[in-house]
Amino acid sequence: MKNPFKSVAVFLSVATTVAAASIKEEKFGEMPDGREVKIFTLENGKGMRVKVTEYGAILASVEAPDRDGKSAELTHGHDTLEGWLKDTSYFGATVGRFGNRIADGKFTLDGKEYTLAKNNNPGGMPCSLHGGKVGFNKVLWKGTKTADGVEFTYLSKDGEEGFPGNLSVKVTYTLNDDNELGWHATATTDAPTVVNLVQHAYWNISGDPAAPVTDQMLTLEADHYLPTNKGLIPTGERAPVAGTPMDFTKPTEIGKGVGENFPALKLAGGYDHAWVLRPGDGVRKAATVEDSKSGRILTVSTDAPAIHFYLGNFLDGGVKGRGGVAYHKRTALCLETEAFPDAPNQPSFPTTVLRPGETYQHRIIFKLSAR
Image (cartoon, rainbow, N blue to C red; front, side):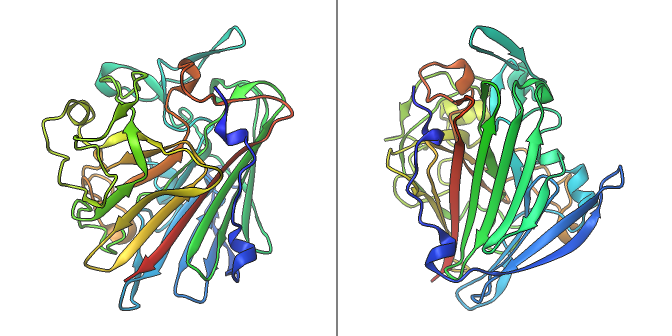
């Protein structure tokens, strides 16, 4: 099937429609081998401030005002580089070379089988998750200020984590005065490979990192989801959401159905699935989260074919983030726009194959507002 990430997308550039943010560059720390790591702060005129770092091309912080104009941190993360170096939850990460899961850590491309690291074992079924043991979230990128944001580049060499081809990757973050945070990933290769770059922020738009997000309202622009087996690998079916607790076609309280005796939720221990976004040209709305207490609204728009909604099921309080706050179960949610999980092994899914001469593109806009 066609690779949706290689089509020419119509994208409303946040940089050309409204004023770009100011950008500050600072030293964040050093890698264990002594290499310097920079962090960049983007700040607009509407009270929104974003931090991104060369380590993992990570979205390290997002602050935005509530209905009363009071700003707060809206993502899970760490105060220091040392915290990010130890992180195993993919907080804010740019995930690659292939985000989400690949069954049994294997795939075949052009008749050749490739073996990847099996770094995840849900349900006793080992798989490759988020690029392997040292994915793009664990490497040092090169960050450069641009006229409207920050550009990160990285060369993933042939054979890295088992993937074929030298992959040249670029990720750009932008922020404008409409409180739109843009993430744009591109990649080219010198040999056939598979690519699925994912932005993995954990959101709690209430501004209280210890509060569950289950009382927030979620809308997903999707009429179908991908059921999985006990290893959280899609079965290949595209199941309708209608009449099930997977239905977020209208604003729905997140915690309303999570405890229901529904096969998909029982297998995954809660929401941890890909929803098939309604087709459309270019960037279109994919999800909306609303918090009634703060009045904040997060709108996610993308050109990707799917969105993975993960409700922080594996957070257990063992990870302490900013200010020493323990991140407990369901205190944040992820809305990861992406290709279909395990696509390299499932011919019925849109292909994730990238070949020489082609350019992979993936765009997201995170818009914060309040009412």
